Image (cartoon, rainbow, N blue to C red; front, top):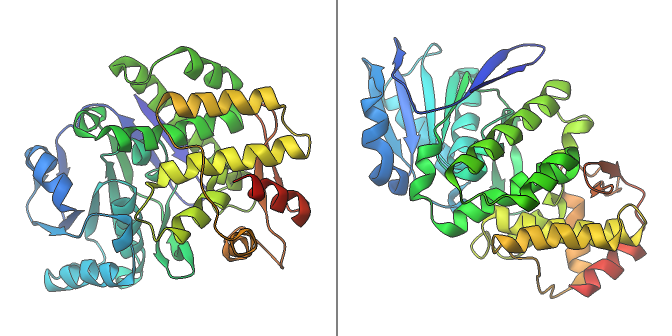
Length: 343
């Protein structure tokens, strides 16, 4: 299965299939982490036909998604004398993809990279669309660049070694796509179990098609693409408050979706019944839907560090029923505070 994404300056294929031999006649560095290296690196190397190949292994986890790790990747590239025609391969989850893409975007002012995502979250969302970057003390992904991959190669067989928690975290992003853009897909998700091998392939394909459609219309997130951050405005604050080591990204997004839906219900964009259906679907896969906010005012102030906020207005992405969404900066502080107080 191949999904093409066409943008003003580039075009590339997203392939959903067993990994096939990849022949590259240039210097290549594979960026991965110890967990993926142990489980899948041998399988990857069997499918790479590259004369000059090296591997850099960086620590595993969102807490290492910072500039020092980028320096480590760049140092490896310089030591192995990569040039402007060289290439990086991101082999791992969303953290690996984001950092490899960012390193590729700034190494000698930009070189090519390929995404080979190994987690469900990265397969359905993070690997597609060219968003790269790192976190800092102010928030998530606040330092980065738009840098499109040369190709995305999605092999669902990698998911067989994924821990149940990581699998569920990826499902949160699938639910996000369905709620915002495709009511039929949402209803299909309600009726089917994604733990089934064939069902998960369908869900990956539907999610990738949706993401590709959105990105092709709005690569640099000037409008529609911001809708893909549904659940993220709240979720990013949760991740920041918990120092990125309590919740997986998809888990924080799941809680954020519930907060966003409570806001939608509050201002009349969504019925309580629709909100409950989304919550039930998240809970079907043990995705957390509640959170204990310690300081409501402090939580609210964190919204202003979000990249989507502008001129002291907070931009919220809210579900409009099932299958629609609304990007708005017109939600009153009083309404948001009353939602946050419930948590």
